[in-house]
Length: 346
Image (cartoon, rainbow, N blue to C red; front, side, top):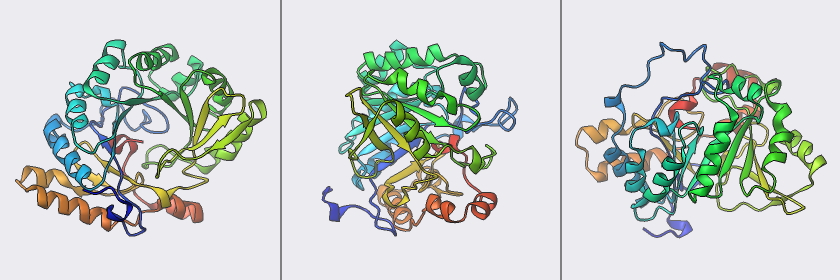
């Protein structure tokens, strides 16, 4: 299929389909306060049974159709994607799809050992993003709520870099009163490392994390805090649909990114579709419901039928939740049901 701009599949707001995020499991070994708070997702919470998850073959089939429709980038997410057994097999299948130019993975790093990082790279993975919300154990363990130490995440970051999964991106979700005091230590630690630290405004994804606007540290405040210590300058986007606003240190010590879904919504440039572990196709991180592709896959639908379902879903897409939230926060946030983040990735 031609990659010319006029040939791309577009939604109701003219946004092209370019990116596919595939959540391979709803399970996670962390209980981060902004995603899966332990009070809601405790030991008795029922996750999806294995037979309800899409198989690797089903995921590959769907991904091939997305590639034919214009998708060029795939990111594997969860939950924690490395909890899915033999994930390297899926990576190899996806890496072989014609048209896929970038294959990445987001992980909390707990299971990213040197051997696992090498195996993923050999299977065809290009890059990883690792979540890390602070550098001191007290704060980080309060955020992940399972007592996991910072040192093992830092080891995972270096293992990824040594395996060639570069540049490694580090995602820090900033929640006021919880870890905003770690902004400068994180910036200082990763300056000059070759890794890219990205600060993410605390978002109202799902309905379980008790989100409040006063716990959001705005992107402008994050930028100001860092810029006062290490002057920054803006960097142009690397590709269409990039969600992080990029800045580089004026002294040449690398760059950072800021993802400001709350205070500076980027809905109008969003090019992402999301596939949940059980095969629901979502068109927004804040969506309430998706299109059931698993039912089609398992009822014998041919590729033309599947592609029509994908095409119709994207062409009918008019999502712009973050823009609407900014205009009408109290009523929108308080009343609208939304899928939880661990089901469709951050």
